[in-house]
Image 1 (cartoon, one colour):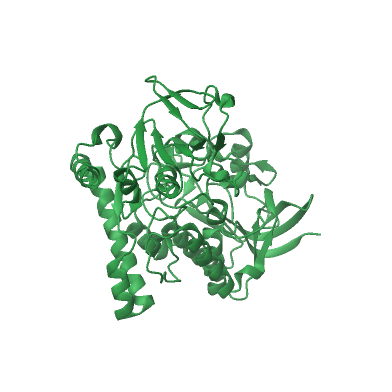
Image 2 (image 1 turned 135 degrees about the vertical axis):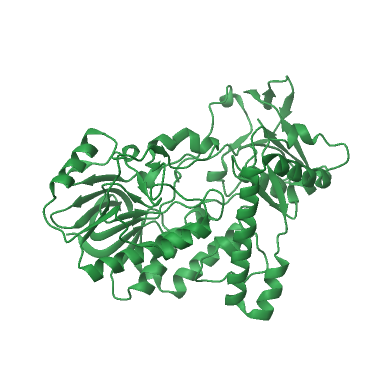
Length: 502
C-alpha cells in the first residue's frame, strides 16, 4: 500500500534539507518526506571523506540564507559543513521526516489523478509513495562511482590506487610517496593535506588550472558579527561576497587578459623566485571557462615553497609497477596514486520519469528557469551555480517552489506545467567547459536561447525573477486537473517518440 504526501523530496543533502526547511516554514500543515538512498544525511559532505576535504566557496554563501554561518573560518572543512547540515535538520525537526535507504528509481505522473507515483528500492524490496509535487534534490553527479580515465598499464601498478570519492578509511600515507593525478578543486585540496605526513606529494597535471589564494577567515565577517549580531552580519557579508564573486566573474568574461595577468601576478608572489609559473600555473583557457580553484591561505603554494609538494605538468604514457611513466620519458615513483580525475554526471540521480504512461527523454526536454521540465507537471529539481555557491541557487529554487504552491492553492489549481516555445533554440544546460560536464551533459535536459529557458548564472538577477517575479508568466500553465487535454496528449507523444519538446 502506498503512502501519500503533499510533497516528496528526493535527497537529504545540502539542497534537500534546505528545501524541507523552506517548505515546512511556508506550509506548516503540508505533509512531506525526504527519500534518501544512503543511510545518513549530508549528501556530498558525508560521501567525500578524503584528507582536507573542504568547501570551494565561502560559507557565507554556501550556507543557507535562513541559517547564519557563525564560525570564524569562511572556507570550512567537510566535517564542519556536515555538522552545519545536521544541526539545521535537527533544530527544525527535519530529520524526523527522512526515510533512509530509499533509492528512488521511477516516478510516474497521472494527469487524471493529478499526482505522482514514486517507486523506491528499500531493504531488498520496493516501496511506493504518491505525492502532489515532486522535488528532486539529488545533485548532478554519480554518487556510486567517480571518473577514472583508461590509463594504460594501470593493472601493473603494485602500489595503492585511490579515487577521492571512495577514500579508504584505513589508508595510511605516512612516509609514502604520493602522486595526485589532477589539477582541479579536489587535487589542490588533497596535495597540501597529504603533505602533513607523506614523504612527498606530487601533483601531476595534464594542464594547469587557475588557482586563487584566499584568506581562510573573513576578517570583516568576524568583526561585523561582534558589532551587528550573527543574522545582520551574515546578510551583509553574504551580499558582499556575492558582489565580489560576481565582479570577478564578469571581469573574467569581459576582460580576460587583465584577469589572467592579475591571477598570474598573485601566483608569482606565492611561489619561490624563478619558479616556472607559465608551465605549471598558466592555463590554456580563459578565466572562468572552468571554475576557479580557491586555496585558503595559499596552502598549496606554501607546500610547494617548503619543498613538501611538487607540480609536474605532463601527460601519462602508462602506469608501471612502481609508479608512472610520462610522455616526456620521465618516471614518477609512487607508493600511492590518487586519481583526482573528476566526477561522472548523473541527471536526477538516475530517476526514470514517465508522464501519463510515456517515458520522458530528459535530453529532449527543456529546463524552465533551470528548475522545471517542459511538459512535466508538478516537478522541480535543483542545480546550483557553476560560478558561485551551490546553495545560493538551491535556496532560490526552494523559495520559488513554495511561491508556486501558494499560487496553486490560491487559484485552486492541481497541476502546473511549463509549456515549451518552439521558437526557442536549445542550448546545453550548463555552459561550462569542465571535462566532467562535457563528458555527460548530452544526457541532461537542454536550456534555451532566451528567458525563461536559460539557466541563469547571476544570483542578483535570479533574486529578482525567482523571489519576486511573476509566477503566472504566460509560459507555465495551471489547470485544475482531470483528463489530459489534446495539448497534453501531443506533449506525451513527443516524449514517447523522443522528439524535442523545445
